[in-house]
Amino acid sequence: MTNPHASPPTNELPEPTGSSGGAVSRFLRHQYRHFNAATVIDAADAYTAHLEGGGKMFVTIAGAMSTAELGISLAEMIRRDKIQAITCTGANLEEDIFNLV
Image (cartoon, rainbow, N blue to C red; front, top):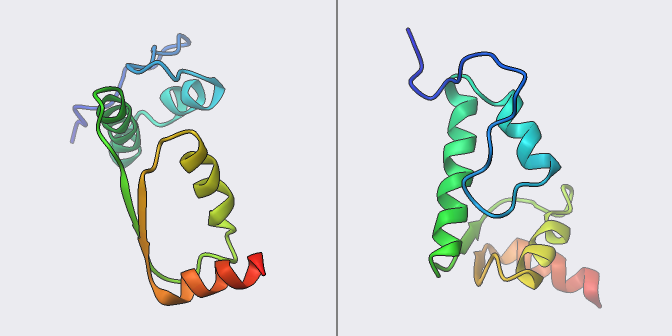
């Protein structure tokens, strides 16, 4: 079965479609070429195009996030205007408020 998203092997790194083509983007484009991994690139490109087109992102999370310290990543994305709203379970909200107090 051939994956239509898979790129042929090459040493050249494909250019990102958006304006945020840093080291992580180049790494993902080089390593995430096959099967379901290629979908990560498609999703990242769609997210970049959505934001560059003036779209807004609403994130929904559930389950324990404190162990992964997801708030660190979310806070930076909020500061950079990549996320405009978050909805979460009460446990997530309580843990973050407790950590701030």
